[in-house]
Length: 130
Image (cartoon, rainbow, N blue to C red; front, side):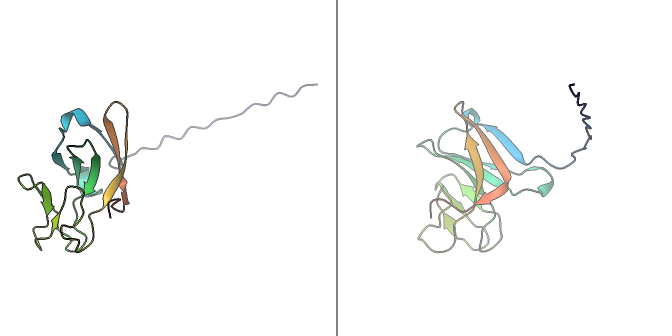
């Protein structure tokens, strides 16, 4: 009277040879006021800076300048980014100094309660400070 149903589960092994899309970073290695450059493996994902402000805000800022296409550099003495190609300056949040031009993109991220940050290297988001 009862029916017995047998299910078959087929597991396929998929070999993942692509670079990791997520970066997990420990904020204890990034003191307030720091901007640390990262270049993900194989160049598939954008180079970025992990910025931690004195107010404990955290940003993952894409290094590629939107106007020139050059990689911005962090000037620790001035506390801002500079585009080496056109000289344009950006504050620590990636906003153009003086209000001229487009802001640097950010990468999406999640911050945990234990001060770990997971950055989605494949997801650029508009700068939330513009």
